[in-house]
Image (cartoon, rainbow, N blue to C red):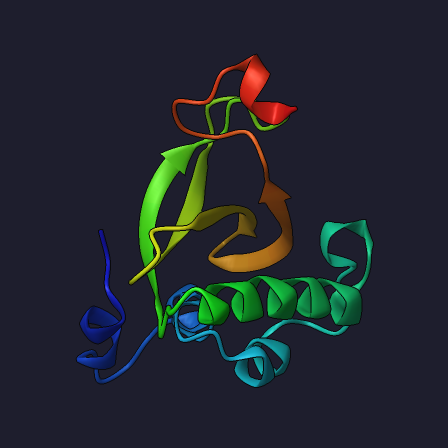
Length: 125
């Protein structure tokens, strides 16, 4: 599992690591600066996508989280068996996952993944 401090120690981060860092630090301003304005993230647009992330961040903060940890899991749904980034609250253990669509190290889309890990079909209801 990757912790925020691991990324803070790097003198230079590539693009994807900077995006992960902004999510792990629950910084919607930085997420907004890093994401491309022309991409329709999650088919809802950049602004709505960032608002959705902000709602998740506020939920984590309400549960005492000051940062998110990053772990890799696998989608069991629409991106079957592709890796997803699971962001885990450092205090609450609550988590959510994002699937990053990448081309040549550049994010071309991001989707929330609701069916990952050891879930079974009954967990989705």
